Length: 287
Length: 287
Image 1: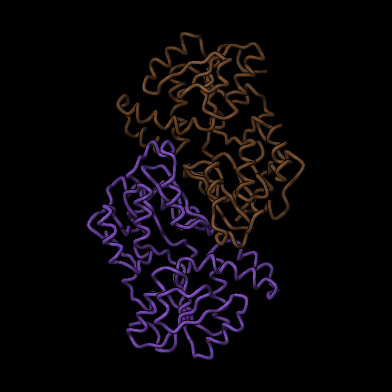
Image 2 (image 1 turned 45 degrees about the horizontal axis):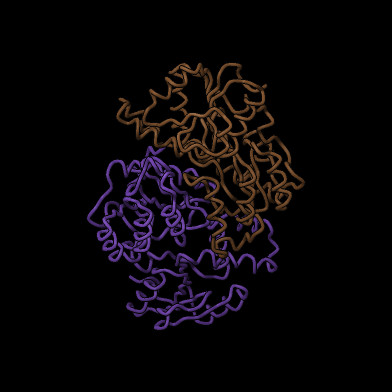
């Protein structure tokens, strides 16, 4: 189990996930190619890698076909802002202002459009789990030694309600709630920057919910295509949550990827934070 | 027109609004008293002022009654975080854990509860407009020389949809959208800090919407009591929007207070930004 037997292109943003994908393919002896649209990262040195330019999608697609690539997996957290350049560079190539307007809307619309490009070119876009297995997802229950209190789960349910309300608008893959007080809602800044600003929040802004308390909640948006846009968490998320004075991290069970599960468990236990996959029942009724 | 003929207590947070209220009462020769729960600010020196402590609500209410106060107006942007201390200090005094749970929910619930306290004590809580007139609100149309483009209004409609979606959850009095991309949603941090972090957003996070473009949108939450929790904007909001690389500020017409209208108009014209009150029709259909 490491995905298709035919060549796989790993379109790699940064973060642990693309590396894990490349290693899994290498270990299984299956053909693959790491593609990046930025400078190559050090870990890529031991893998077959190609650097491409968004400005030249024709060159990119021809290169994949020449190498017999049949499947594509898109992975990596900072892939999205890089991809957002793509729509600008292709602007002159397309005759579809309506589609471009869609692209401006949010990450989902953009990624769905990119997926459509791959599909039109005959490639099949697969989810990272097809290569790394279902264990890549964080399931129900605690990851480490600790778990959330009832108050923490109430905060998670409220955060889930906030994320749900925003979902149809293609915004908000996460929120931070502490004792009912919403400390942050994730927009274009991303999870790490949201946590950083909560760490910098003046004390009186969270007077009713002083640290350590509160949770970071992450879930896929309803419109998200789980093949290429699942939220990913890892040890860095634990460090960010700790700095933000939170008690833990809650994700919708099976709704987040955790490519560095062991490292994240250790980081959470060391920090005294919980990382928890909450069931739909546990997340219901938040207001 | 400067409000009731009987003594008015101006419960003053910071910002221009409490000062404007005190000046209007003084100019009209009507009785008033500025109450603050923090250190007195310099402008208060020429007004009758009392400093009170949240920890001693009994003393506070008795002092108001002793001076014949019949009406109360709550004003000032940073009043809310200060008020949040109140619920902690009163925790031991109340037997209503359910009500306290409500308080933790958000500003609206808290302010409604504070308003209820005043009401129980026989005071009437009035809106700042009762003293300063309807012109305090920003009506429909542009404040200064500039107005929004069609794309700016489309951004405002999307921001309005985001704020509307969050309203029932008592979160989100504002959002920033640039060419469809949601750059920020206001939670506990407040407008100024939201704008500051957008100013600090890495360029690639808004690659599709490089400055200057985008709008700050402000509107009352549906649950907000317009007597004491209208969003307020002023010259500082213009400076924040300018630093955040936005093209302008849009508010729901009649849905925001502007105690320093002339200064704000001048600041906007100087900065080349628009400040615009949008009608419900202009804000409809955002997605």
